[in-house]
Image (cartoon, rainbow, N blue to C red; front, side, top):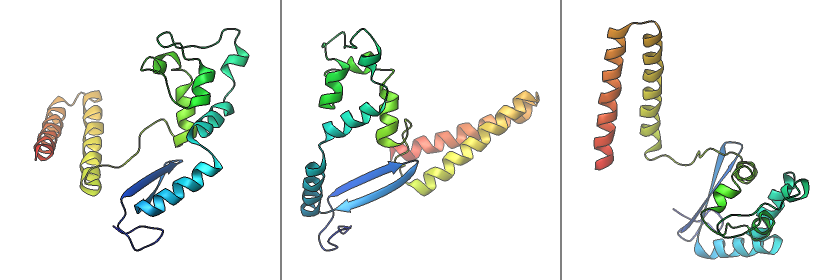
Length: 168
């Protein structure tokens, strides 16, 4: 794959941006990626970006009398906003109620909507399974147990085939 910017060198850096569920990909060679990275750093650093995004939400420490801190490493929410990184794995739990809003602002969603393996084929199978599960639920609600058993067996067979393919 050739670099999207210079169109000459092999792309080694692949960036994916997801905004409001729309996926945009950028494939860059090492030189163009370095240049693009320098341009971005001049405008803002990642910690500034995260801190700025965190500032869009109501300031937790201003509204509360207690300063929000991680029980394990002692990092405050204010420090997290300043640095842009958690101090330890327990910070996720300590700042749990504030992370989803931040992720939503940074990524446009709190749900991962990235790439799928063999996207076309995988999506067809996934959609088929979803359809069968809906039909199974309807059959159970209507108390059509024989039909439900057939659908259940279809689902199991598809999942078995999918597991075999993933082992390869």
